[in-house]
Image (cartoon, rainbow, N blue to C red; front, top):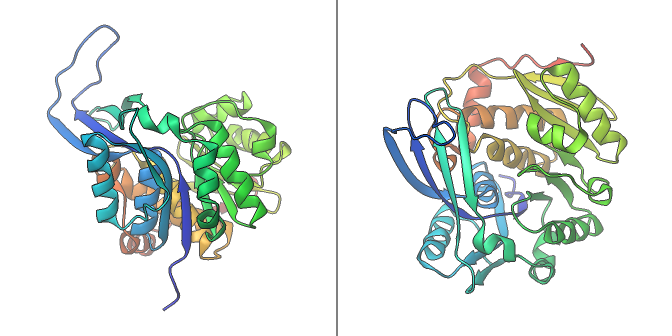
Length: 316
């Protein structure tokens, strides 16, 4: 049996407080839900847990508050098998928290209080340099200061580690950072923020991806209505959504990015990695909550064997 690939994940850690109801409240209004759930969340924590469940050894680089919620977050992460050697305790800011509302169609709204996540520093990243350099892939998100993200990416590139960027929450990014990214995975809204191009179908996703490649990104996989558009300098492909009973999209992007990172760490071709990631994201939407929806490896392989993913290679 081949050894588990090593993944380093830099990002946020939070406690998710989720309420599901028939409809989302309108501005200034209120709505009654039918289910409440409290669980570990944050894109960094989700990515690290997903990577472990999918067959990798994951090291998390993050800051976590020393309050009750922070201690619970560390317990959850340890229980999932995530390495916490690069997690720094933050005594002066509370642990991160996210309020999540989900309606009967799986649509969501989120409101976050970053807390300790915004205290992650360049010094914290530099202290984790050996663990980042020992990874096959670095997975980064944008829930922590951009200066920390850039420092981690520079370390990874210097060590020959591949960089996967999940550009969430949406923000404009410096060109120097994009030039160091091997694969970027934005959703439609994030792609529009990055490129100014509205993404509403495969063709517009291709235009946005082309923009990112022209600015130095190695490859882009953009989530669009109906599927994902993959574009690199060698290939283009459209991966349609898999037919599953979706109930909540929370965490689907995290599952995709983590699965992509794991597959790339296993030296799989980009298109193969994207297929694996598409299946992981599909499974994540069938369960409520980000952590609860993160799939295990056998589930992803099972879905890929049961359902034919009709990848369309080349321009339409």
